[in-house]
Image 1 (cartoon, rainbow, N blue to C red):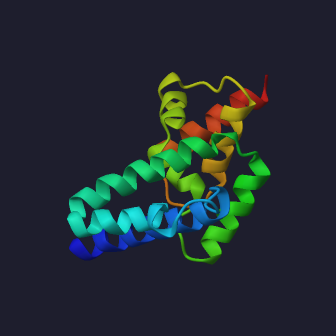
Image 2: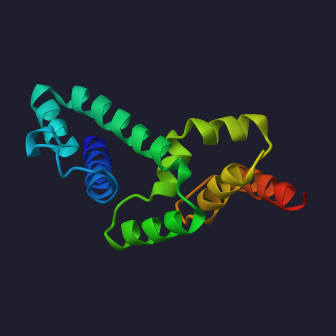
Length: 145
């Protein structure tokens, strides 16, 4: 079980590194203040502290990325998959407050929500049959508007 947790941590850390290198303006930030360096400091404090910090950082990335258009998410997901890293769409499914609200409401209200649902639905990461069915229904209902 610990091996799975270590693997999950490693892939999440890889996502954070990949994402921050491409989408965060790190030019004026000293190397020791960059997200991965800060995470490595947390690792020295203890793995549970590092896990909490990593989850918060991933959540920040997910929420920050909600303005990405559908094509940008597709490009990023393709690149992440090519590097063996968990996709943004999968992380949105896991961590996005907006995604959770849409599922709870059981209705898409606008195009931004629609593309969030489409990206998650189109991502090949495993989902339960019930979740896939709900997402397909939400997308279908919105497309019928």
